[in-house]
Length: 192
Image 1 (cartoon, helix red, strand yellow):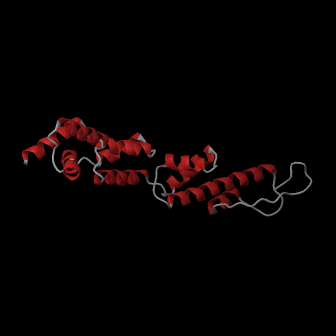
Image 2 (cartoon, rainbow, N blue to C red; image 1 turned 135 degrees about the vertical axis):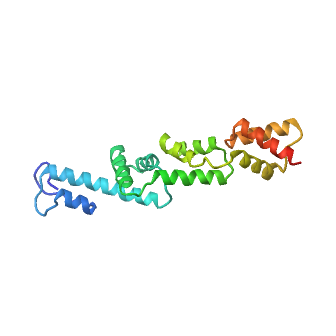
Image 3 (cartoon, rainbow, N blue to C red; image 1 turned 90 degrees about the horizontal axis):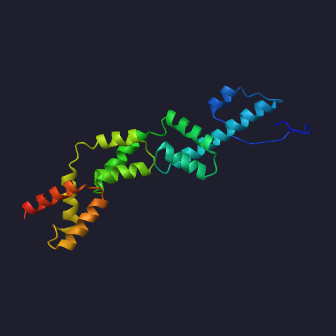
């Protein structure tokens, strides 16, 4: 790279994506300061993309969550946003599929719809993606799931009021609403 004071050239190492290399028209020999800035910016973006791919190797996540992790690793916000946009465009980040799978995992864990949506929101998914994932769970009978959680954790509906209140509070923390809990308790009491 050219030295600002014009004395001697500076050596810098960085990686470029093939498409960046072609787009920038990289050539040998002297380059202008503007070309140097473009190359350094492209190298910074390539490094962020590589780091993003590495982070995705640990598991799928939302673009917002990945951008947050990249900035935590020292990548500036603009570069992190461009890297996540690139990874989304190339299909490395599939928010709809990831949110749907995470929502299905929540159902298997015995969570109610509210807890599933809160979990997706905490993972950085947008409201549209969360709504689509919730819509994908329309076939799930959360009342039956609530009854299954009661059977598994408590065996049956507790007789004593304090124990029953504790159970209801625990089920609400799992994301079930009061109507689902009441109906699940009715179902279990009828089966006695």
